[in-house]
Image (tube, rainbow, N blue to C red):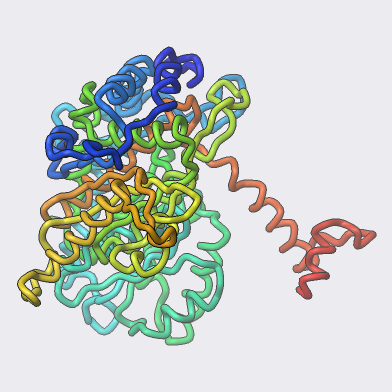
Length: 532
């Protein structure tokens, strides 16, 4: 796959010219019923309403030209077919395939990468057998009682995606099953989770691809110590998800082990065993397969060349329009669903760790903006927190709203003629319109400038299948943007320096590294922080 610099595309010049006079949403005919009806794309149960973006049909045509010129769909196809895309030409790099999509290509015959999907099927079979053994009483605690809780011990991609999906789908949890998560190396995080558990009926799922993640191994030792204090055998309560052959791949130490492959990046690993073991325990195997089905459908839909019929590609290009051509530095992802309370946090990692890069795939400094700052919280809570800034602040923040027409639990009633779910969605749509249209007032403090670009992504209900689809929509949006910017979205070199320096500080604290002169920055920082 051959990539070119973003600035080399002819469509970039055309878009830059169009950006000098972007569509005025506040004009008399800036947001008509005809425009709202025309600017709608659909994919795998989701509708994307984007009339409230500052684009015209001419801009969308130019974005299509950019997608075609940059070969974005071809790059997505190459990724799904196993091309080695995790690399920097001419420099040391991970040099790997990028095959999180193979984890959900289990429905296709033949799959795009048979060897990778065969491994995914093998792990799914292992998971199904394990879940069956839990259900029929083959696997119990020492007293013959069923396990009721699984605690996932991991950090980064081994926590954020799985936690977001579990919270999103708690409404579908099996009776008597629950999941919790330990991520932070802060011992108070572990202590708080352990304090609320019946440890005798708890499984701990320790997740680390390398088997050497410092925070995760530290928390595992805290868990092991606590189990021992309670007179419980850790080997009956701890499980592992790790790379085959890693230091954690030890059948005598863990009740069960599941494998993750090095071509599945941590932040893209929620649909691998990294997420599916805990999700399977809490939700059941049928829900796991529904998550994979939804993601798989989007994987295939992402190969549609027409951006007006490809929701993840259109989202990616609208983001590029806002970021590179209109100059907006951040994007807020605002789900109008309490169940998606941690989904923005997952996207922060997935997007910012992927596209927070300043070097091209050819090892040169980029000459254009790459990944934006991604943040967000659920509505309607956010309306009473930070919406003041996005409506009237000096910083224009593009918004991506996510909502559902129906609630998960169906526990609702009418108050003043409308249900709570109707109020929730009405608030979301009202915010979209208010950001776009603004309002004039003789009192300047009550003026809303409008022209705040946003879009609405809406589906019927948040289910395992739609959650899988939503996850994959954003995974592909992120990858499409990285391809367009000519950066490697699949490494994370930026997290390594801090790890190295943390190890050096810990060596100082443990006495393994003593300097003849206490003048190093590390020693000085420890001393001034009062840490000994």
